[in-house]
Amino acid sequence: MSDETKHKSGSPWRNFYGRIHGKTLNKAQKVYLAEDLPRVSPGPVSWEENPERTKLDMEKRFHGKPVWLEVGFGGGEHLVHMAQLYPDVEIIGCEPYVNGVAMCLSRMRREGGVDNIAIHAGDVRDLFDVLPDASIEKAFLNYPDPWPKARHHRRRFVTPEHLGPLHRVLKTGSEFRVATDIPDYVRQTMEEVPKAGFEWLGAHPEDWDTPPHDWLSTRYEQKALREGRTPHYMSFRRI
Image 1 (cartoon, one colour):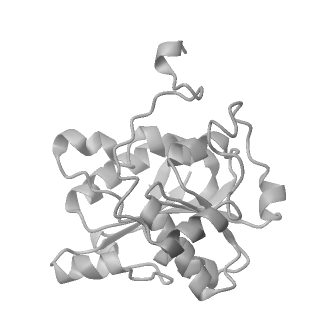
Image 2 (cartoon, rainbow, N blue to C red):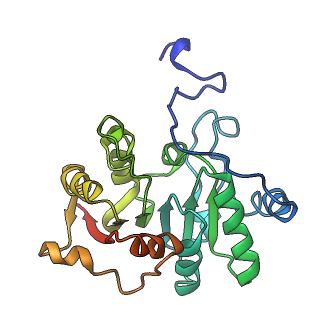
């Protein structure tokens, strides 16, 4: 790779289109980011910390427990819910939106005793770089950015750029769940995810209407319902 195709940190140039910052953080949120975020790091993920892209020591960091991954956890409602529901599992949450990370850290403090969450506050592609093969046992993609314009569909998560690395880091037989209220995102998910090496676990289109048994309806989903949008839930198995 030539120098022209690399960032000054050594990383490849990767266009990032989502929001990173929102409204100004309050004093408490700034404290959570300064004090709590380093403590819940999954390990050296960024190119500055890990320019050699050495794989994370999953056994050491996660104490030999099963590790799950949530991509884009928003304010952390589902992430914290699953961590509380499955205390014997470690869950990595990946979210580049700083305000969402601060909300999640606040939620973790408020709930108390949530010590099985790791947070990467950045691009999931950087995390994929350093996750070992077959190191993740379940993955979640809940209400991802829809990128509704046709010319922006390539920015969606359900594209080969993301699905290929996800397939690599998931163990064979692992479950990958997708929730969205955008019909065209359902279409693209059902087209692209099976091509990436996953098997849909449903039998009929009606299965899209039934959430998983341990699902938490988040604030975003409640807003979608109020505005007349229908949630869809798709579960796949990594082949």
